[in-house]
Image (tube, rainbow over all chains, first blue to last red; front, side, top):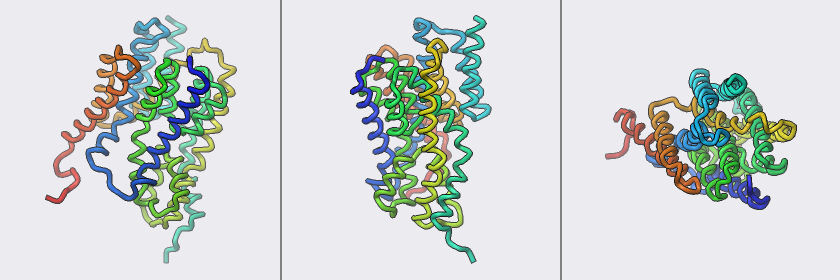
Length: 108
Length: 243
């Protein structure tokens, strides 16, 4: 990470204020008004749209492996997704995935 | 004869309903403290994120992009995009909490996270009905086991993080955290479609500078998800409009 302290605090401040404004938007500024259906329909998919876009290159082309696919990371990702879908429990997903990563890392 | 529920009782009910969520909040906040410290943030900065933002997924998103040295505006824009869904939470709470004082609404907004929102809206729509003051108290009750533990867990993780060697490969925990958050959210074909479209777009736009491909991929995923939902929702289930 190569940011100055001022830049890091700037990121924290902008993200904090921006997040507050999103949360305050209708409560504080707009009031008791219905959101249009098309907007709600898009907002419902924000998390499942942004996070996979961020994660896909990290899993497929990890920098720690010079950008080449790494079997241990691919397997760990598959285990985390599988456990997450079946058990609906994110913490168990992380534990199982990281266990797979460490275990295969030790073996390979 | 039924007696109105006092704000004090509503506060206790909120705290009781939110208590089981500590099982999720504590590990996530500890994890953020650990990986934030490992990534190179100091204690004050790690705490600054958890106190100033209180939004797990976007905090991890900012951390990941910062460890890739993305431009600061991209870090902020992408992490805010993760939080856009909270506009929907704000809209859902406003019919109930609109009459409350501005100070109360501002405090509610600050603590408006997945769990406090979901529990509160669920309660507000159930019987027996609550007065506005009791509704505010219920919301603050749900925040009690969640917000202070978010701070405390982060602090614990940040202190532990300084003792964990970098060789443990904890940086890989962040991508796994995202996958673990996404997987249970893949409830419908629309959610799966949104995720797949965003992955395809992100991989094909990987060479676009300043991580801008990420934002384009995010918007693509949202559009695809919304479109699948629109096409698969039977006409009868759509909200009725005046002709």
